[in-house]
Image (cartoon, rainbow, N blue to C red; front, side):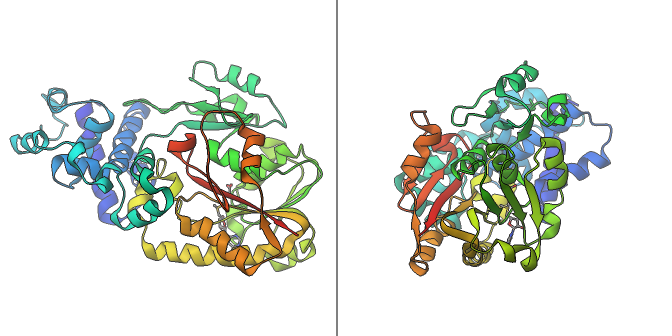
Amino acid sequence: MRLGGRLAAAIEILDDIDRRHRPAADALKDWGLSHRFAGSGDRAAIGNIVYDALRRKRSAGWLFDADSSRALALGALMLEWGMDAAAINAALDGDRFAPAELSQEERSALSGRTLDDAPDAVRADCPDWCVPLVEDAFGADWVGEIAALAARPPLDLRVNTLLSTREKVLSELEGTGATPSVLVADGIRIPPIAGDGRHPNVQAEPAFRKGWFEVQDEGSQIVADLAGAAPGMQVLDYCAGAGGKTLSMSAAMDNRGQIFAHDAEKQRLAPIFDRLRRAGSRNVQTVAGAAGLAPLEGEMDLVLVDAPCTGSGTWRRRPDAKWRLTDRQLDVRLREQASILEASKSYVKRGGRLVYITCSIFPQENQKQIENFLAANPDFSVGNHEELWAGIAGGQPGRARFSGTGLALTPAATGTDGFFFSALTRS
Ligand SMILES: C[S@@+](CC[C@H](N)C(=O)[O-])C[C@H]1O[C@@H](n2cnc3c(N)ncnc32)[C@H](O)[C@@H]1O
């Protein structure tokens, strides 16, 4: 397919996402199933246009003074692919599968507008209702911080030190652009792709099948490291889900001690069994329901709460979620988080740690949850996050944003997804 056909497909998929309020990944998958002739390069390029259009939705809409799928897809080419109107029209010319070339009307809209004149929320590609929340989070830096959440993300890997080393994995991935991560000792980064490129399919690599590495955002690796799981500890991963943090901690514990992986929704744990086997993790057992948890009461050195959240820190990877999120959903998450913190605290032994993590940038889900928890639980106190940070990333470029109750990672500050981390000690 030429660019025109890819652009037409991207517009069709954006229409589908908009009309049916469905996740981008589902719409792309369905399109692929009904267009089997499209090769993997075409699918990757179409996916890039769709995701770029969703990341830069407000900027593209501003440039074209329209919010149609066509405007968003064309805007993506201009904002992220470095094409101007003339280059787009030249690429569409003579392609019978292409959408219409840019009209005179579209060209005059473009010539009269630049992003420099756009309102802050447009330049940041931020939903209006989130502006007060992100102003609260980042103060005067909010536009830059939220704009960084609209950029293409890198592909991050975590080397599984139970089975391999960073040097060995880097050598297996030679030619993919993989380099050592800056902020974590066992991380590898493949930079963001440009234009119609695509990241290598690392999960097809023999090294992946041998369990030498996992795909995990560097921010997620950092917060798992900061949790401080160490060999011999008793650890409860209270919201273990598919086990991303469980696997990190199992490697940090060198398979010694015990991790109890729990999730309120048992089926969420399903992928963990294969992942543990592949990774050679032998110190993890899953626990379900109150009966499984009861013996752990007051016994844990570390309870990790990787809480369900709005996911606003992952908007680079899931830009469609940004536009679907509502203040009602935020309220539901806030209630869940408060009740999970309350429910999980009793498993922490005296002197043990309760670690609270979200992949959200909103203070309500982060600092404010911890402030409320501390006010109601005077037997818990906040750890020294500057010291924890120095222990894993001291002296490295890219600095976390510290608050009285924890630290935050963001694309602008640390080059990672957005995360909040807070460690509390039980006296
Ligand atoms: C952010 S995800 C966990 C991601 C996982 N820790 C990882 O690193 O791959 C949050 C998880 O919390 C679970 N959850 C939601 N409510 C819960 C509750 N009341 N108690 C325990 N887990 C809960 C969800 O099912 C979901 O799997």
